[in-house]
Amino acid sequence: MTEKILQKFNIDAFQKKLIEWFQDNKRDLPWRHDQDPYKVWVSEIMLQQTQVDTVIPYFQRFIAKYPSLYDLAYADEQEVLKMWEGLGYYSRVRNLQNAVREVVDEYGGEVPDDPKKLGKLKGVGPYTKGAILSIAFDQPQPAVDGNVMRVLSRVLKIEDDIAQPKVKKQFEGYAEALISHDDPSSFNQGLMELGALVCTPKEPMCMFCPVQEHCLAFQEGLEENLPVKSKAKKQKKIHYTVLLIRNGKNECLIEKRPDNGLLANMWQFPMVPVDEIGRDHMANWFQMEYGIDVELSAKKGDLKHVFTHIIWQLEVVEARTKSDQAEDERLCFVSRDELDDYPFPVSHQKMMQYL
Ligand code: SF4
Image (cartoon, rainbow, N blue to C red; front, side, top):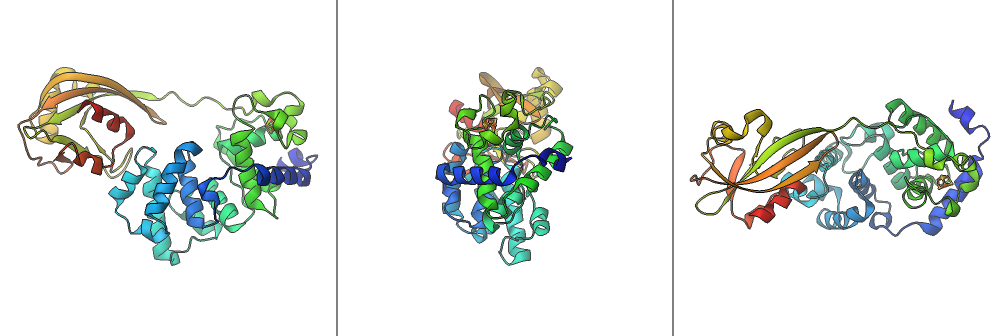
């Protein structure tokens, strides 16, 4: 199948155009200053689901704090989460730290350049593996994410649904067939850069595209119709009442989330699953769940937070308690200033305005 699609495609000319354009037009991004596999790895993990402009200051702060793989391996997890605060998808950084620790323990602190070993590390999926191997180690390995699939689906006029896992595999085959063996790093980064700057999801700038003459979708005027992507399932909405509980010393009650699952090990203000509990029973439920008596008062506002599979609909309510100490090990009372020492997800950071 791959061969049939590529039969009439001028691979050499395509590679040359793409690589030359990349060399002349690449953005000066901090992770492009050297080929250190650790930095390439950190940048690729940060860039998953996150815009380049958002990533730049995070990357700079993160690398200043953890300049080597050892610094990250030996760092305290809560401190690392704090450095990631606001970037979202926190499992990324927990996986990264676990993987980096494995590199220290198993590979003497050297990021493995063997595809099998690298691919087994936590959080290193096929895309990240291909990106590290090509950018840091100059190996001709495909690195296919949504961005690259969009570009290739247009260039090769592929009308398969890119939301399907088996189609992603096919795209890895196309990328493998196209990749330059002389400069795989520039080739892969060129595809990514083209997707980010020219071959954008809406209104691609075909008039300025370096590979326009090779692009089958452009030749047929189909660029806006590709890629084909079926809609993801609608996210499930979950309602919570979030309690901003203060005691007589004006300390706030905060809670550490479980050490696995969504936002693992992050901190939050306690959340009551209001659909299950019912509005009238929240104080009772809170006493049963956490052993603390609370008295609810004014509603402060509503917030919404969208995750990949769910949406949190959050009603923020003020509450008081007479307790000074929390027996439950998930909880602790902290002063307003001390809140800044704990990693909070963005939705809960926003609630701090109500304190
Ligand atoms: Fe994308 Fe247009 Fe370039 Fe084709 S010609 S690769 S659709 S920007």
